[in-house]
Image (cartoon, rainbow, N blue to C red):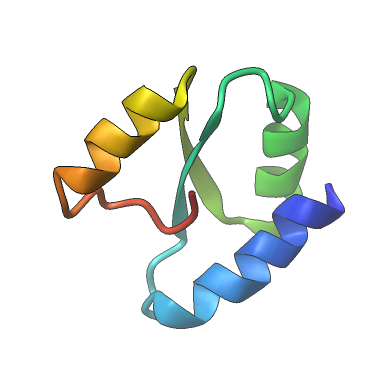
Length: 72
């Protein structure tokens, strides 16, 4: 969970003070659902967790622009 915590620390300062949602785009099966649930309970920050299964899928989505993700 420390990697997710570090990522949040890096991403949250860019969000507004009232925005309590972190949008994450990551490899499938990389972070267990229980880690996300525990993080949400301990911080009060909601996670929108979207996954990709190949570099091609990742690149296609990111190159389309304005992905809306806080952390990739």
